[in-house]
Length: 214
DNA sequence: ATTTTCAAT
Image (cartoon, rainbow, N blue to C red; front, side, top):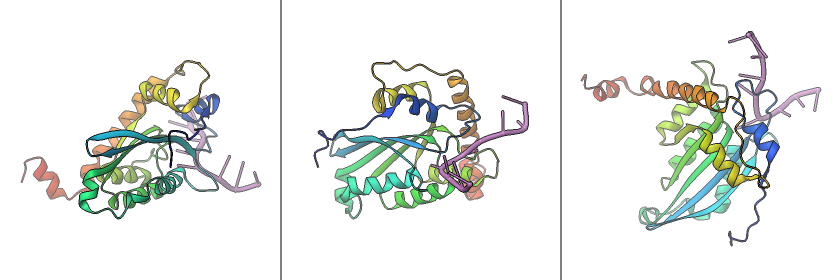
């Protein structure tokens, strides 16, 4: 497959802003966008392999659609032996307007256990159903963290990067919306708080050992 | 401001 000649459709400018706006009450965002970059590392060389964006369709969450897309893009992702995996690996960065729901977190975790040669970094604009302490979505995020996924809340630089890479911007420069920074800081705090409870879900003996109390 | 969320109608 010749990826260099592949034409990539960009996200319309106003769609990007509407769906990625990290406001507190994101009313009416009944769609989720996922912008991705896939890098392929062969031996010491790492090169950009593919990029683009997807959105949820027909009741199927965008993360699941991405896994399908990835399967088609990298047919050799599974079934490599240890030697091949050392030589060939992929790293994926995606920017999603919502953080994953519990079902997608479970599916992703299962997927990642089968692909040790794949590294995943997730940036999210807003946290999906994470208001309650005991929410399943919060536990899903911790599950992903335990699986080695790096999850971060998008900051100005990340929106700027997405703007340059995935948006049909027609020479327009990225202009931060009101509250971008404050919202990002608030959501980062929230995600940190969620992650801190990781200790509650591991074996307490491990936690004590970690703290030098055992 | 206590309001929203990968719709359903």
